[in-house]
Length: 133
Image 1 (cartoon, one colour):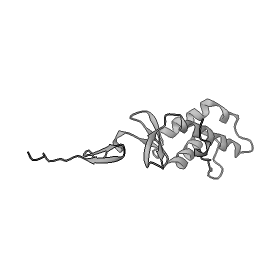
Image 2 (cartoon, helix red, strand yellow):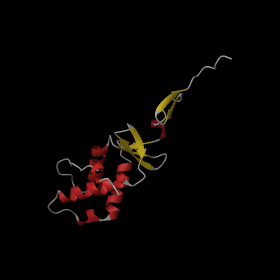
Image 3 (cartoon, rainbow, N blue to C red):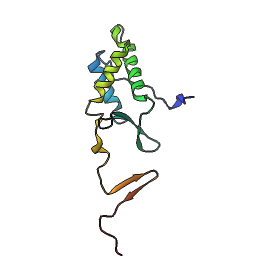
Image 4 (tube, rainbow, N blue to C red):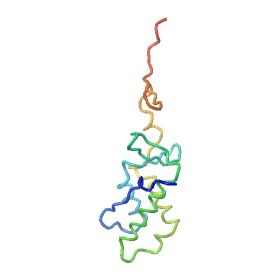
């Protein structure tokens, strides 16, 4: 069973225009520090505040947040376009958000220091000089 207390609600900027482009931009602005799309691996990542690490989104949490965000935009308008309820619309918004510079990354952001090895629970600094015999 899912722990619903872990989910957050979306606070929208004042009246987002109900277009795919505008919603994708607003989504990227809202989640810029919490989500990233790794184009090398073709996968969404989520920032885990508790552990202080990026984690792969293995349960489609980010696409669900896109749907929720689109739903909130739709509800914020008196007469929203009917197309906002379609799956192809929120999928297009999610694809557009992947390419936003605030969310898009590649493998180079994860390996900035070649002599530091990240392991669960600690970091190991590799020595560049040979060890004495």
